Amino acid sequence: MNSMSKNCCTDNHKCCNHNHNCCNDNHNCCNDNHNCCKKEDRPCPTIIKCGTPSATTIPVATVAGTSFTVSSVTLNNSCLCNPITKLEFASNLVAPVAFTGVINFQVFKLCKGQFAPIPVGPAWTFELVALLASQTFSFFVCDCNSCFDECCTYTVVATVTSPVTVGTLSINNATLGAITTCNSGNCC
Image (tube, rainbow, N blue to C red):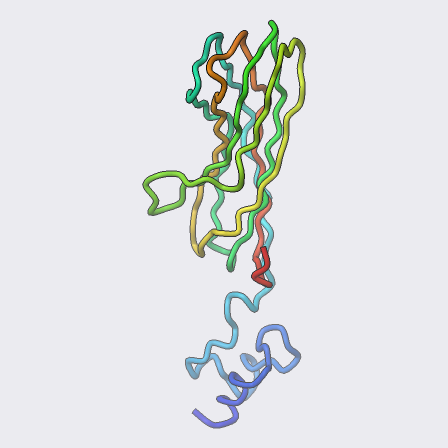
């Protein structure tokens, strides 16, 4: 290895996004185990993924603690460096008869190597008192804690938190979407 190649990789040149491209000139840093063209120096792709809309019905007299999976989406972040993901949930809550109850909506993720899903962001509480119609319900959360080369399934779970529900509630067109890209600035 010559001193020119070492200087190329140790000075402030960003080999893949700087005009002085070490990987293509005589300095040849990439063949000297300095790996100038790091994954994070390359342009970062953005992934947009939408889950399939689904419907779930919360029946009459559902007791506290009962949970329902209402939507999910799976992302493969293997091509991203330090991924950051914005998750957007939207649904239409329909009550054919007056519905009263409290429901928490929470995003969970399960990635390779994990045995139990972990929560992402806060729980979103929706309190319904004698709803007799339809109403939209939506929220978004960001996940800044993904690791490289992970495939993760994000799931929205609705949990009844009132002692018991009155009437039935349909959670229609429940959709979870994701936009994910590289968190190059490590700011989240």
